[in-house]
Image (cartoon, rainbow, N blue to C red; front, side, top):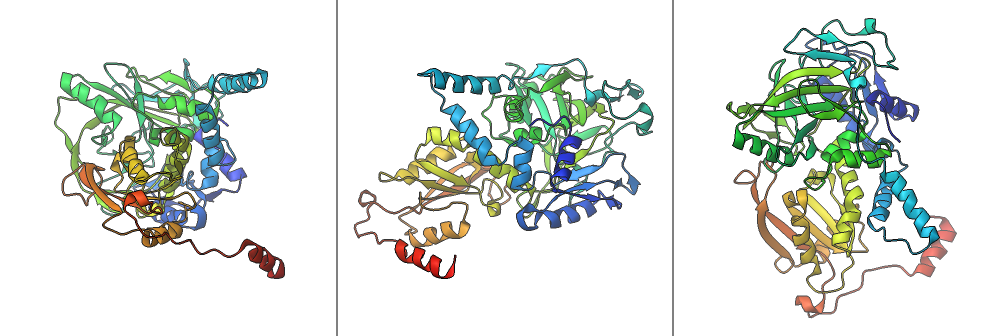
Length: 507
């Protein structure tokens, strides 16, 4: 299902009983974080929250703020237009395994898949709701005539033109260096190939026209930036917020470098993304976005300290120098909703976003490693610090093959701990995994240390972006792995007795 605006998604959440509306004033300075943090830590992720009157320095913002909108399995599935994230993963998995048809039935099935894929490619449009209000910073603020089908008359527009100072941008935690946009989709292009990337890098507000651009060392946006720094030419950058909720998910998805995130978004929503050219640079953004912030990075100016920021690690990341983003225009819908999130000590909303990526891309992992049964990223591992993998083990040292293979795949390079278990273990049950870890391992024999890239946000490494990794083989040991004793069976009750007792007393 495709959503035409973030407001449409919020309305769908409301109809599904997945939304709490908060009508009283709530400050973007810390208060909204405290309310949202309590909700996110409720069983199952709680509900999405719509703050109808968020305040900025005591003044009510003209835009409502929505948070925790993707913070449960049900809401993640709703954002993709499916009953469950597993359904979307299964669909993508069947596509990855598609083979040339051998008969008429297979041809029809493959045609159906192709018809779905025809929506994946973005299409250019000349106008859209993201430009209902246009404010260029090098000229007096301008308001366009209502976009065809716009729901509100021009008279309902906020009296002040939009700037970074009157959007409901949060200061999330007490020691944060300022306000941060937390769900920005950052659009850049490779200056050599023209390939587009949509990434999610936090945006710290410095003043009404400048921000930090926190693209980390290993991110695609940073790679694009390095090419501009090498040539000394101004780099166009655009940030969009809102629109279809699947945009934010795709911006965080671990896609291979060079694969357009808008292709994945079009595939998931089964409808192509309408893209529109920005007002002050040549980048394209979704025409149905709620907010668009256009600008540039100047490679000739010095970097600026960015941070601190209360991060998904549960700790503050300390200030580091990053590029400055200069704003040249802000455009938005007249009925825009500002989507946000917070990160911190888990579990939080980002757990569901990251876990959905794992589920969706598990079929791709299985294409490379067919012995993999399942993968889980426990909330306590704050994304990639801790990974549990179950495999169908058939030969000695197979667990180590999986460890090395995963460390070599995209953002899995940041994983500090990988625990490999047998296929009868539910990797989403941390208690079950820890039981096998303690029961099935000899620490010296079944562990391996190695070195590699580390997350820039990891404060525990001795050097930034460089660290060590630990792999643990918690599978049943085979004779070829130096284990010479008989391996005992796991304790299980006789199935006939279990069923008899079920009948006597109920489950």
